[in-house]
Image 1 (cartoon, helix red, strand yellow):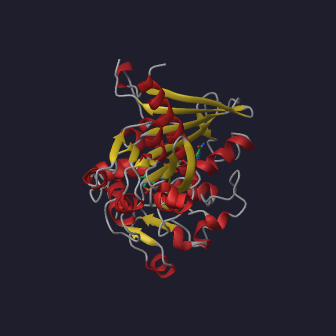
Image 2: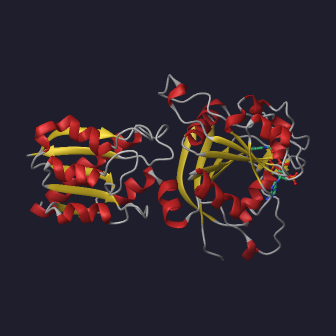
Image 3: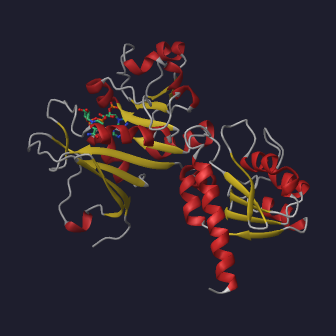
Length: 366
Ligand SMILES: NC(=O)c1ccc[n+]([C@@H]2O[C@H](COP(=O)([O-])OP(=O)(O)OC[C@H]3O[C@@H](n4cnc5c(N)ncnc54)[C@H](OP(=O)(O)O)[C@@H]3O)[C@@H](O)[C@H]2O)c1
């Protein structure tokens, strides 16, 4: 192996460790990004850290504290460009300069206008060698919502659908418990837990009296340590009952519909009725909600798909047939093959007897 390949492999090895660390904050850092940092000197790991929670120190600070004097002359691997601004904590780029690191390896640039290249510039101006783009695609996955929101003011939207083999999501009566098995339903909890908000349609709330919060997570014993998603109900006729279970925690409920004083009295944030794309933009700009999960019936799910607002569909398919009178997962009427919505398959995973497909809408038409 050539020397440059060896060096690249070493950089990738340590950056993957930093990415692993960053995932430790995946349920608790919102609205901040997930970031990990590893400090290496003479081929030896001397310090590491990750960002655990908004308001707490960034990954680089924990790693530098861990390394102490050993940080001098070392290489720091950081999954996201070190910050350049004074927020709740001082800029990490300056911290790395003061710690005396000789080299910084960065996976993803930070498109946040407060950072955007300035972090790298501070380091270079101080004579530190900076290498960028190492494991960038893997590190990008850590912060799909944050990175998209900073660049476009729109959140990353995941649409979850649980269907039968014949593509049905509920019986004609609205009954839908349960199409998929326990493992698939547990898996949904993970996607909720990495979302800033779960959006649903009023008909789903009326049919299921769902809570859409996180009640169980693999590897997390104390759920009070995670940031619960907001639950957002789209309810243009003001039909959400005050007895709805989700209103037992009204501080994490938001409603788009006509203004209702009784909801305001409970502390529920209300949005004016507006197009879905506008609502999503407001979630980013005013509420720092960067990852949205849509868990709705076919009506609202179809609207999100037709308005091309979905970045990823998470489709659980159960080995069962519900029949023609059950509700289809997609309600649009298409007449020509050219109208179809196609997806690219990103991943297939078996969960008990069900399978989970992760699908990315494809721009290709036939
Ligand atoms: N299998 C699954 O994955 C799954 C997931 C969730 C729900 N479900 C099932 O789905 C059934 C409900 O499905 P559904 O299709 O009747 O209801 P839905 O999609 O959950 O809610 C639809 C309602 O959302 C409101 N809405 C607000 N803004 C909208 C917009 N821009 N576009 C479209 N709708 C908007 C509309 O009511 P207004 O006009 O009053 O605003 C509309 O009738 C339930 O039986 C539930 O159990 C299944």
